[in-house]
Length: 284
Ligand SMILES: Cc1ncc(C[n+]2csc(CCOP(=O)(O)OP(=O)(O)O)c2C)c(N)n1
Ligand SMILES: [Mg+2]
Image 1 (cartoon, rainbow, N blue to C red):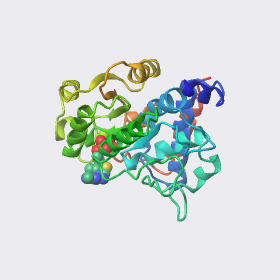
Image 2 (image 1 turned 90 degrees about the vertical axis):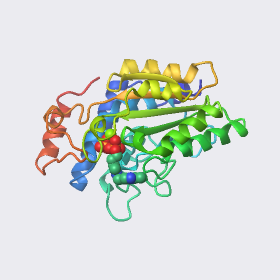
Image 3 (image 1 turned 90 degrees about the horizontal axis):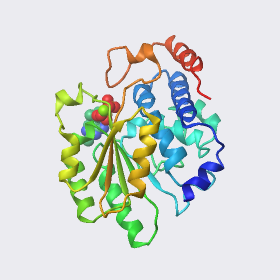
Image 4 (image 1 turned 45 degrees about the vertical axis):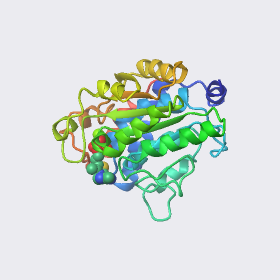
């Protein structure tokens, strides 16, 4: 599979180490700007590691390669996480990290397709990514392009009606080239997602919409690898969803233990502290 050829050229660093690198870059960007959605980035780092270093086919030096798998960031506010993965994957140069969120940077605080190589869509108006993904997956099929579309969405987006219209449409069109990843961190802007608008039983809901469903610990790399492999190789004309239960701020215990909110507050002197915690726990 093209994926293997792609990752082989990216060295044999472990997926755990890649996730660590993604976490470290996100915290560093947070330090540059003095703010950022680092809680989300720390939580989704394992998913991004498995996506970019196990599952996706892409060419770092040719981000628009027609054969690439499309990775859609429906949640524009997670841009700091995707930039970290794109830098780690060699699609963006590492030094650009220092420009995060500044005027004229290609790395604005919310993801913008027009600014950033590797950013496939301008997400952020929540609930749009899956519908765009349906269109892209249909388009790829029409062009007989075997690439896959991966849409990363949040649990907050489960409250958007457009998500479920897109889900119904994907099953109707038998989009077996579409994988939806739900970051279930049980948090959204006003509190816990389960308290705001409970989506449980979530796996049953997706299944009833005609999707192949898996639910995994989104911070367990082995479980993610297995789930991504099933989603890719499954026979059957269904779209696939991987619901990932993640922990916000994962990997930095003093932030994990803090009362979790949508915008986790990190004081000016805590960025270095967070980096030190990560540095003390660097995987091989
Ligand atoms: C259509 C739309 N409504 C509201 C917002 C404002 N908003 C930005 S992030 C966010 C939280 C959404 O939940 P989730 O993505 O699960 O949040 P997180 O896990 O990052 O806390 C909201 C409501 C938006 N961007 N788009
Ligand atoms: Mg959430």
